[in-house]
Structure formats: structure tokens, C-alpha cells
Amino acid sequence: MRRNQKTFRPKKNAPSGNKCVQLKKHIDATLGSGNLRDAVRLPPGEDLNEWLAVNTVDFFNQVNILYGTLMEFCTPNTCPTMSAGPKFEYRWADGVQIKKPIEVSAPKYVEYLMDWIEAQLDNKSIFPQKIGTQFPQNFKDVVKTIFKRLFRVYAHIYHSHFQKTVNLKEEAHLNTCFKHFTLFTWEFKLIDKAELAPLIDLTESIVSVC
Image (cartoon, rainbow, N blue to C red; front, side):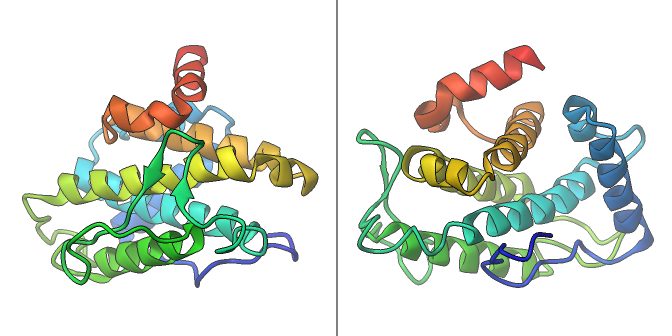
């Protein structure tokens, strides 16, 4: 990790247990091969929910690090709303503490989002910490909401901070992370196509080329 990277919050670890360690090693090994299409596929014989859980933690950490490099440039003054270009604006609601969607700055939205995702990851009834524990029936719905909202951070970065990313010489890393994210969400149908509209051209080019 580069010294100038600012991690938004401490890195989360995958659920404990030998199987999760094995799955994490599989992810790292296949990513190292350079074939992202292979890296996202469910390994033969593995449990889908366990695969989704381990990868959700990984993608959460990736977005944390990416956004952390831009925190000093993404402020309430530069980004008073959480947007992805002039046509798309996101409001925050978590259904518990904030039930009615509210307009907030981009950094505040990301703060709310990361707090909310961390709460989901730490909830053992949603993300079991031990192998063999049953996943809840709504597990994939929770995962889909997490990925839908993480996509919004990518959309904001590309629309509002891409030039700064280029200036920091981080664009190759950003593009690789988003490519990995896109292939994973496409493989498991985690984000509805309508939600991809702010980056639909980029998303479709990734899926069609790979």
C-alpha cells in the first residue's frame, strides 16, 4: 500500500473460519493471474453465500481505500450533493435512523454509507462469522443494496474526481478496481441495469470486452 493512501476507516477482515481463509486465498490467487473474469466466478463446489460474503468485505475495503485517496478533494464545498454528473443525485436513507431520504454532501453520504455497511458486516445474523452458520433468507437482498450503494461511490468518483485521480496517477488502479467490481456484480446480477445509468457506457464496454 502506498504511503500517501488514506484509508477512510480500518480495513475489515473477512468472516473467520478456514473456509473463508481459503476463499480469500482463492480470490487473491486468481486476481494475481490477471484474469478478472475467472476471479469473480464461484469456485466449483463452494457455497454462493459464503462467496458473496467474502467478496463483499473485499469490495468494501477497495472502495474505502479509493475514496480515501480523494477525501481531501471531496468536501462539502466541492461536492455539496452526492451526484454522478448533472442527471443523477443520490439522497441518503437507511430505513432505521434516517427513514426519509435526505440531501447531504458527497462526503457525508459516503460517511453514512460506510457506517451503514460496517454495521451490516458486523451483524452476525446477516454476515455469520463462523463457517456453517446459516445465512438469513434476505442475505442476497442486503448484498445487492450494499453493491448498489458502493456503485454510487464509483459513479461519483468518475464524474467528479476522475481528473484528480489522473493527477495522482491512480487512474489505472481505479479502472482495475471498477472493472473487477463490474464483472462481479454482473456475474451475480447484483445491480439492476437502471442503477448503472451514470456509467452505463463504461460498464457495458467492460462486460463486452472481457
